[in-house]
Amino acid sequence: MHNIIEQFMRYFMPNISDESIEQFNEIVSLKSFAKGKVVLKQGQKPQNFYILKSGVARSFIKNNEEKEHIRTLYTTLSTFGSLSALIQKNDSNATYDCLTPCEFFVGNFQAFIELTKTNHELALFYNRVLESLFIRTEKRVDELALLSATERYLKLKTEIPEINNLIPQYHIASFLNITPVQLSRIRKKLYST
Image (cartoon, rainbow, N blue to C red; front, side, top):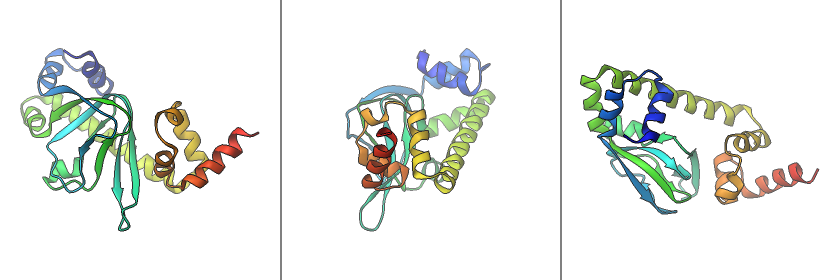
């Protein structure tokens, strides 16, 4: 049994049984990906979900001018995948790649869904993960609408203190939905006082 998987599952369901954890553990495998490795391309039909053991990954979309817009940054114990595409059996509307070297637990989504049909605990676990993803998405939308760029940057620094040392500034700016020049001005203002 992977301790990280147990920790991940108990975060959502502290009393989940060892048997359910073991069943889940049997459908995931640990894989390493190099910095820059694309895990899933926009337009591909996904089959897997991912739990990040280490590193930083992202999901992004491209606009009509091929400019990338980061939707989400993922760090340790984040779970991700093109969920709507997995559920609807459609193509992914985003690309997922590694901003640093990453280790993921990779699981087949359909195999997991089959487990939830016979294991009530895993069905509840799935529900709690979905609730968490919904809350995370709602918070992200609210932050983009309500917080200033400086507030978004400071919040990101609180959540990922070493972010400036982990990924390039233009990726941070994209995640914050600002230009690199705006980010540079924010950083200069914050750190020159």
